[in-house]
Amino acid sequence: MSDTALEAILRRDRTVVAIALVIVTLLAWAYLLHLGYEMGRSGAPAPDDASAEMPGMDMSEMDMPGMDMGAAIAPGFRAWTLADFGFIFTMWAVMMVGMMTPSVTPMLLLYALVGRKARIEGKLFAPTGWFFSGYVLVWVFFSIGATLFQWLLASMALLTPMMATANSAVGGLVLIGAGLYQWTPVKEACLHQCQAPIAFLSSHGGFRSDPFGALRLGIDHGIYCLGCCWALMALLFVGGVMNIVWIGGLAILILLEKTLPTGRLIPRLSGTMLVVAGIWLLVGV
Image (cartoon, rainbow, N blue to C red; front, side, top):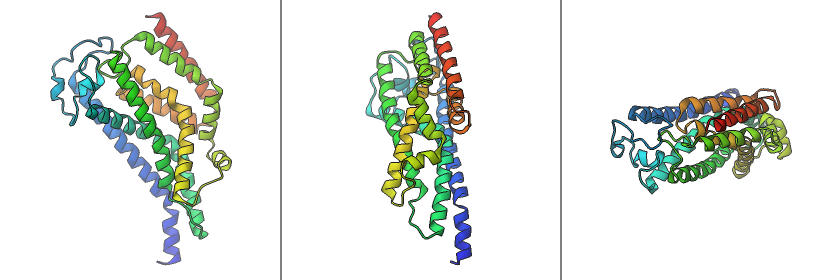
């Protein structure tokens, strides 16, 4: 292969990474939309009727291979099986990929750009996939915790069939807690690391040439991202874990927080709105 052809391929690295990220994101959202469609087709009861039987369907016959969907998403059906845990964990993991991939794209494109320049100079450089794998790994572990928390809420009959909190007081407290977290120094510090990829790299020794080092760097970045966004993810239990509009709204909020040069403005505005909404929900109990 000629040097000119090789250079042309290297120049397309960022395009290839961008296309791959778009494909991953679209596949994740397609899966979520499929699950949302299946739940909508089931005719689930309204969120304020947590004890109602889901009309027009036999939950044991729902077309979700490997599990009884109703057992995992609605209170009062039966104890979860291992298959139920596996299904809900997969749902959370795919959801995290769909929600978080757009916001980490600037960092990944920067990685691809630096990697291309390093290879042109004849330096070793770990592929972008190692960094992204480390980032995703953090959210996989988060998905395990979210699955266990959902199981706890379901076992206490605190979830509706749409996987939202069945208790308005609990929902109000979650809103207030998430809103207050938006104002904390921890949120600010983690968000700063996510908003400034170059500053993050400078403080962590730059990109790595070895795969394990790139994986670890991706994990470090994912931890900051988790510290920035975990409270917002808890809001899924308020609006409904499979509420596509709610999921999309949170994904857009996270993307705006990380990419717009507004500093603390968006987190504090959204935090204030969440606290007000939580108080309103508690007052209406």
